[in-house]
Length: 134
Image (tube, rainbow, N blue to C red; front, top):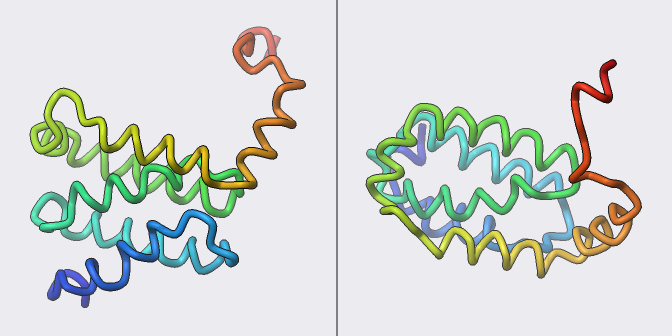
């Protein structure tokens, strides 16, 4: 609620913290992510930082730690569900910036590199829910 009254806090605190993709404390990262996501749920597209925060949060939905990834994915889902029309209008048909940030996160986070190496043993592309549950 305090951030909703002053957008300066988003620029000075949330956005810099969200751009640190290799933070030594994932617990702090989760806290910042939750604050940012609840801010978006509260303010929606009326926030001057709506698109910028979405772009900053999206890479965190790919984090290998369950405690980071899952809350980010769940809350982004609700933000997208409520505001995808407005987001699409603001971003236009193609917004390379989002893809560049996702790519930067995937390439810069050392733990994700290790996860990718370990996942090569699984055949993820061949996953079939019907096969797994029969």
